[in-house]
Length: 331
Image 1 (cartoon, rainbow, N blue to C red):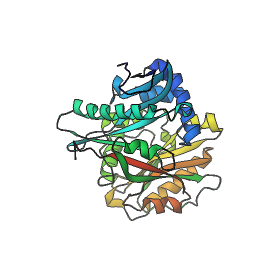
Image 2: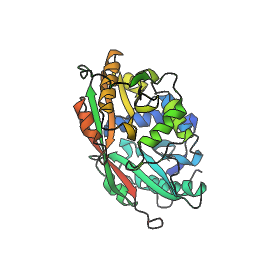
Image 3: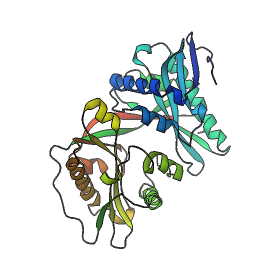
Image 4: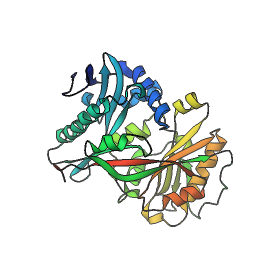
């Protein structure tokens, strides 16, 4: 695919991204972060790792060029099927120097159609659930998304904790055992995570492919900084999974962790396990030389997670809006 969509600005072409575009896309992501303050930072190795996603194909990561210059990018972030539906996120942006020219309109319209096609290719009986997200205070985004049927659905709070003064330690509940994620059985962890989050907003199960791509084989995953709490019977009771991004250290001159997954299994809730694990994790990260830790939490999280995070030192730094496609073809 290399094409000029109907009605697009003169000189605009859309084409698939290839590994040869890695440096250009890394630079584009850096420009987007600086303009929109997303705190989503990339080095080249991150971009190439995410391009090599077994759940997507060449048509699912697209670049927009104007007269041969890459000015925008967008990609699909599919999940695993859940019952009769398949959720697909749309991610991307237009370089700050090329905004207000209709490029985003063309690119987003193309990606909405591509998301529908991606789902149809994986099963004619699957209903597409198309989503997107952006900082709630980013100008122009609500209007852009609304023009393509994407409307505010939920909100996500981005939170951060300063590790200069880590939280006080607390004792482990009797009978529970603490360990890191080093030498763990990732299939056991994946199964536990899929149990822990059933019924949460926007939940869909994590497949083996997803887990390998984004967790166990991710270059940013830090098993020695991730914690696991086992119950007296040996089963997983709660867990905290941490990433550390090279791009943050390179671009900000500080080490920072991100708590990608925080979960407690249903049979072990209301025992303060998340509080214990979070405190232990933040103290571990501070001792390892990290200065800050971050996470995000859904505004409709039914477990009261926001208050738990605030108690151990996290505070809200920004709100993101989650958009959902209101698709009359798939009500």
